[in-house]
Image (tube, rainbow, N blue to C red; front, side):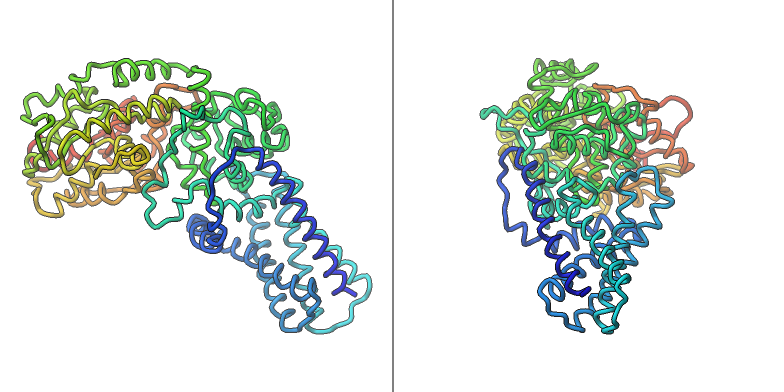
Length: 628
């Protein structure tokens, strides 16, 4: 009797799951069409077991619990389908089902235990219920399998209890997705892995995995103003969120008390997709804002009804949220798409944001400077300007840092160092225009594409072997984003070139770079966007400094607050992001904070009060070479 009842529940649950999938699919289909490679569905096992678990495994306890509960559930469902759904009733399958039930029981128990002392970043509400309903299902599966394996006759009341427990757990698994419950993440998450908006994340060569996709401006694509403006598989990705809050814990804007919580932002978009409000959300709100005040619909404007404008402008585009997300959701892509609509259609940015874009349009520089002033600091360094018809091995692009008096010290140290290594270097002079990074991050895609096309044409008319730049934002634009617009260049960050010169013996330090301990700050656009965390450390180790790491380092490095146009939009918070990062540096006891980005230099040197001395790695090397 128990076996027949379990078989019946299985088929009912399967029907419920099909209903739930159809219901969520109707919501996803409100989004725009998107070209997807259906062969990605065949890659789901690899992407689940390798790519996703590479992120989950950063928390070993959670990874083991997830293996137990998810692996046990998938195995149990397959065995229930065979042994009870198809009526095989084989003792060997019951033995395997018992093991699957016990595995799931252990995993669900671990998750239930973890939630008892859960961190504040974890959402409550239905998520508090989930481990217990999964425990109930696992227990029912294990008992059903044990009965089937041993052949023991059960009292009717006990068989009824097991059946009810199985039904309750099956309802969570099967009806949860359709009702918008926590288990929708499992169904959406698996499909998201196969139909991901960024399939390049799963390739061996992940070079373009951080590049924003160009808008088709000639086709009237002006970003995302309504939930329905997102591609349908982007809406699908929002449903994959497990509300674990890892993005929340990593977000510099959230830590500074600015009105952005990446987890809440994704849940806002889920609510908008389903014509609902954020009243059911049971996690941390955007700082300074409560829940239950916002409502959306697929065809309703996102700002301000669903999400406040300042929430979008608080983002530094550092990708810490993306780096930490176990479901591989692309928060930054969504934010920039919404910014594009605000900028291109509304034309309203807070504080100095619009002024920066206007100066880019008028002068091809962020600060409104004459182009010829970009290299005034090099007037006495005898660096040739690469004009058409000339050749050079290395073309040095300095970016907007060339206009900053403080950063000019870094640039002079870099040029002297490269000259001492005997490299054939050249500058672009007045022909170096802005790369468009700031315009793109502030949503001015038209401005970015204009600036990118202009610089690509300039570079294409000159003869050089490689480009070197100390600016990670410029590096990312040239190396990762320009290829989509036809620009293909061999681009190095200055940390990579300097570390290579030291390794080859072309540079020989003559003294210690610093007598003090040094801690290194990873720029977001170098560590996370360009995936370069080793070269700066190799350089510092070659200089013999005592390197001490901050708790958040390498790919997990904390943002300085200088990216994504944040210094221009300047949304207020309880603290400043660079103050938080300087506190990290001070906690190491280091006397020197080494940096490798002009934005990081400006933001971290702008912190008042006692702090480590901020020096670029090029300045430390020049000091060790006795040329500074």
